[in-house]
Length: 84
Image: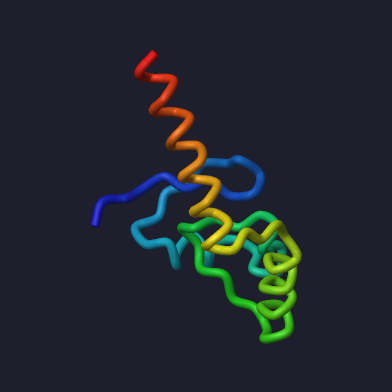
């Protein structure tokens, strides 16, 4: 696999053939969900994962039915404006 550039939390570019190599070369204690990098695996305790999920659940939630109504209203308005 070719080497790919990765940036660590200090915006220093480094190359690694696998994301795990990038993870191993960084300080595991400094990685957290706040500076999450999709190319580097995130390891955490069960409590850290539950805390992460609870913070997500505290955000804005729209039910599927409500979202579909809003989308249909937007689509109707959008298509009407395109025909004018």
